[in-house]
Length: 84
Image (cartoon, rainbow, N blue to C red; front, side, top):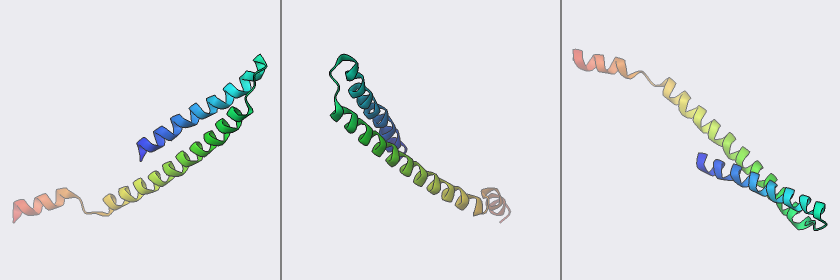
């Protein structure tokens, strides 16, 4: 899941770059409103997806850590084996 978040984050930067390229075209009298709309829509969509997935990953990670903390420690079990 972390790799998916990484790819979505990189896609966000690339798509916002498209928006800037379309906007920068107006400096040379060749602006591209389709690039601007495509870049902004795609950039915000990828950013939102990355944030949602990252939040889900953190919740799963927290639950996993809580489960590990609630389990008895392994050191106690190894002492029982040596004594028994």
